[in-house]
Length: 603
Image (tube, rainbow, N blue to C red):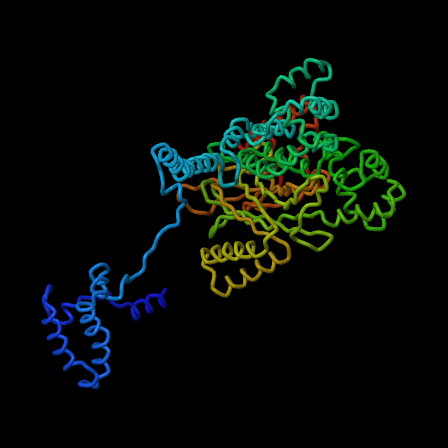
């Protein structure tokens, strides 16, 4: 642009109009004799024989001679009168090449041409703009329809079980827009027979249940049957049209499940807490869809509280093989992962009956599965202990390890037709009250982003606590080292509730693998705020162990999922009785009375 401006400035010149009378110093309309006299007078002054100056020579040739010729020569005078210059037409003319029919327009064709110009140049762009704006207004930033979010928020309940989460999930507007063709009727009927056992129908009234199922909205029926086809691995029985519909549903499912998770974690209480049970149900549904495992596989079986679902995500595994290895005391999935290579090879080949190649496939998948650990602490910045009303900061380091040595990886999901990145959710929750205090999504895919986030968080934390520059830099370097070794820092804040001892759980849930979730117990003691506002409070010897206000312990592996078992884990009567006991115990703990208070004193 600078070069163009410089070029124009130095090359532009003013266009001068050729005026022969002015050049000869005459008035317009002068006679021929006056023209000749003026020419002889200027020739004496500018003719090259009289004036050796080169500029005088150029002026005489370009102006004086042409002016004299224009006023005395008939042809030059005619050109001057017509075009304003003795040499004829001067300058540049521009035009637009148009078809001949546009240049010869009668009344009828003129109206048609006008309508065509208005339609193409005005109406068509306006229509395209309206369509684009209307479609873009239907979606959120995560490419999920606003109508879907409204439905998810409305149908979300605090005690939603995994199977009920599926009922909410299929209410997405994206699924409702999938057309239900007449040709889909018979294939869906056959699919219904294949997946009927997964639809939670009352077998005692099977006819009424089937009639009730088919009376639902056709789009809802189709969406549920297609999702069940994915869960039961019956997609091979679908027609090409239904299979394309299923692929479209699976393509948008990760986004919909993420938004459904956010709807479960939306603050619903006065303290700003979300709901734990539906959040866990969403994660379980996501795991089952990605790994194509039926929800009924989570039912307690063979002494395993997690069912056979984790085993079914391994290649060549089925329920018969799970029963075989259960006879060798391998009932939990973690038991299989904790075995040595030699013992596991012997178990899979001799007991399960797998070949050497099939065993290698199993080992490959086990090496890809993540193992998680959680290191979490809570504190009030710059203060000792936690008093009610304080702003409490949690620091959680989540570490991921794999047998393959990788940190970032795509989930092994052979029945899911798209690449799926692993996502993790950290939930700090009270399992008794079903409240989620803090939630955050965690990803191990981008190490650079994690390093930048951890460095900034640690730097702000250290500067806020008054640490020196050397201490701050050392803490940042340590955080960067932990991130590079496979850890991610999660920080959050919440306001300390009323005085009590709280037994919280920190969950790290994976949306792509079954049986890889981690739970850590976190005990927090909230002290009563003193009238003077001081941070000190008298503590008995029995309570000295709780002086810091925080205690962390890890539960045994066999009890790892007791606090959030799915609906298949126990009967309704047992769940109701357990819920009543939990509420009663929670009330005693929070009031500081009864047996729980005695236990605290004994500690």
